Image (cartoon, rainbow, N blue to C red; front, side, top):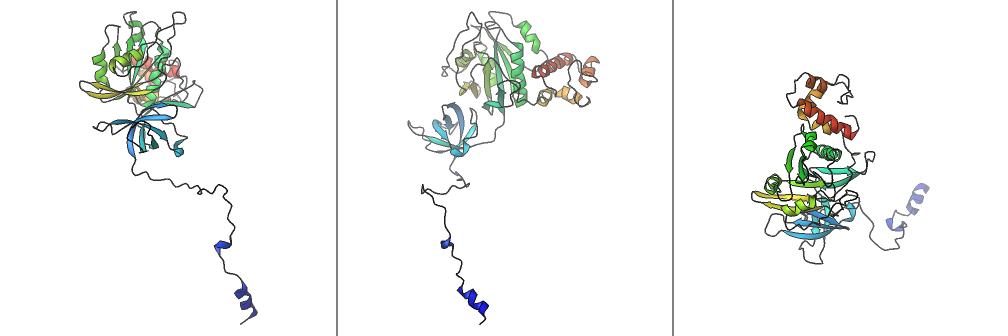
Length: 347
C-alpha cells in the first residue's frame, strides 16, 4: 500500500451531523413556501366587509344556506377581498355565534368595478367584484343632477364591461327632460321615480338574474330605493342640507343584499354615496369599445385619433357628417366625445 493510500484511509468520512446548524431561539418550525391544498374548502359569496371580518354566504341557494363570519388567511394579506367576491372558505362554517371560518383563496373575477381618488391617481380602489350591472341613481332636484358625475359612472361601467342603468328620482320636484337629453345617444335604460310613484316592478325585472351595484351621489334617494326593493335591508336614509345642497353620507359600507322578485332572484349591492369618481385607472380604449358600431368605423381613423370634434381625418366624424351611421349617429358620436372629454385622455 502506498503512502497515498495511507492518507486517504486517515481522512474522516463526511457526516452531516458534524455540520453546525443555525440556532433557532424560538424553537419553532422553519418557514416553508408550501401551502396546504385546502381540498375541503367551499365556495361562498362575500356579502360585506367590516373591520377585518367578512360576512360570507355558504351553500348559496340551498336549504342549508347560512351566513358565516370569516377572517382572511395570512397568505392573502396583500389581496383586496371585496363584496361580490367568490371566496374559498375553510374552518368552522356552521355560522354559529362566536365561530369563525377562514378565507384561503378567491375565485377568478368576472368583473371589477373600480375608482381612483382622482384622475391622476393610478391607485385603484375596488368597489365591488363580479357585478354585471350598474344602477346609477340621480335626483332631478335636491340635490341638482350632475351630468359629468353620471358620465364618470358610465365610463367606469364601460371600462369594467358592466351594463349601466339610470334611475332619476324626485321627478315630482323637477322635470328631468333636459338632464336626460344629454344621454340620448347612449344605449341606456332609464327609469324615472317620484315619491309616490316608484317603478319598483320595472326596476325589479331588470335585477332578476343579475348582480347589480347601486351608485349615486349622497342624498339622491339611493338607500330609499334599496329599502323599497329589499324591505329587509333597513339601510339608513338621510336628508339634503338646505345650505350646501349636499346629502349626508348614510351608507358607510358596501353590502350585498338578495332581491326576491316574482320572476326570480338577483343581488343588489348598495354602496356609500360619493361626490367624486376618479378615472385614473381606466383604459380609454374600453370607452370606444362600448360603442360597437363607432369602434368598427374607427378602425379607419389615423393612429392616435382622439375622435373629438377637432380631430383631423377622423373616420367617425366623417361618417356621421355623411349620414352613413343613421339617424342616431350624431347623438352617439356626441355621447362618445363627451365621455372621452370627461376622461381627458386620448384613446
